[in-house]
Amino acid sequence: MSKILILGAGISGHTAALVARRKLSKEHEVIVVSPNSNYQWVPSNIWVGVGLMKAKQVTFKLDPIYKKKNIKYIQALAVSIHPEGNSSTRNKAFVRAEFVVGDRKGEREDFEYDYLINATGPKLNFGATEGLGPNKFSQSVCTYGHAEEAWKNLEASFEKLENGEKQTFLIGTGHAMATCQGAAFEYALNIAFEINKRKLDHLAEIIWISNEYELGDFGMGGAYIKRGGYITQTKIFTESILKEYGIKWIKRAGVFKLEKGKAHFELLDGTYHEQHFDFSMLIPGFAGAGLKAFNQHDEDISTSVFAANGFMKVDADYTPKPYEEWKASDWPSIYQSTQYKNVYAAGIAFAPPHTMSKPMQSPNGTKIFPTPPRTGMPSGVIGKIIAENIAHQVKTGKTDEHPHKASMAKMGAACIVSAGYGLRNGAAATMTVFPIVQDWEKYPQWGRDITYTVGEAGLAGHWIKLILHYMFIYKAKAYPFWWLIPE
Image (cartoon, rainbow, N blue to C red; front, side):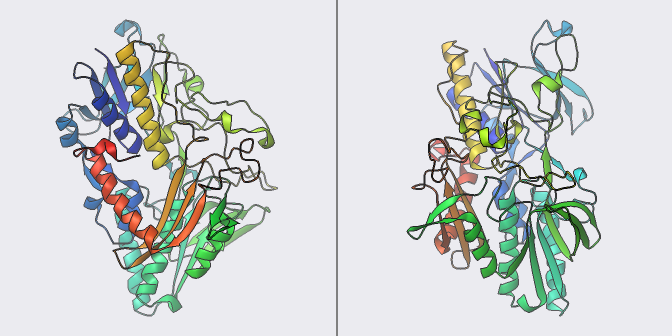
């Protein structure tokens, strides 16, 4: 019997758990350790943040699903991994976790494993920017709880608009190296849509602030896209959408401090500025979840297992080299730990070998550029192929074989930025890229396959966004034939 232990129950971890359980017979144990009792479909948090959905529409309880599927669920926070075991476990690998609810809250227990999937996701590193976060001077839509709180504050700003009071909305990235520009961009468009619907545009100023060198970078180094039969840059695509919605922008900005109603930021040219706001939603920087690693002698080996940012090192090329020498082949394909063959990292938990955007630094030494996005579709695909490879190894005993691969340099992705809600009211900017990571050797002209890298705007993309919401909730609830729905 094999034990597959999965840390985290987000898109990547939950997918891995369902796939592993489906692929393996009941004699093998699938265990999920997560501090969260709910699954959340993160892309729809945007709608929660503008009051168009309730949290219950983007979440559900994990325990009933796992009981139905014979997956053991433990509501606890993993604090350390011990891939070599120690003297008390006779060299059996285990994870130490702390219970977060119930009579055992605060207690720690060790959970042994034969295979480990680290799918802990990121730490929302609000602390890296002074004054950033829901408990301070900005809002977030990174979790459904944050999105609910954001809506309360946004609704208050809408009421002030309706009473004739001008309001400034500052939306974007809250750290000089933050990622997830797409989520913030979508939120800005939804705010603009709601203000327009209320006919309050004349009282509102919406400002997009981003660490991107050019708009439309989205942490992917931007892209050339095919639109309406011609080739254009995502910069032009993005700027045209912002103009259409009446949104101003500040780019090449590293926010470093927030006060009540004021954001302090540094531009890439080294100058410092301030921006007033009445409402702000700024995405924080991401860091690893804070896991530690110890060898059989209980010596801390975290620096060899994890990168400096806390994400797990996997089968990537982490050799330091100039930007011009980065290659698509640097990126991992099986997400196996560099140190332990039976340990994997899925989704945001793995350490990228480098950014997709060109590194930029101000004259003051501040790095201002986006880090790589690894959310949504890529996370689900990675969780799936890791589970499939583990199932293959368990069934065949061939622990060195990985028949399933999913390099982000060979994987496509679709991004739908939707504004509004319902079948008749809404619009979306839809963009597909292939591959996610540029491959200038294979595609020297555009960096990607221009046939599959396209952008369009209109109501159809909005419909797709709605359909995908219900499809992926269905899939995550493991309803009949859930596995037929692609990641």
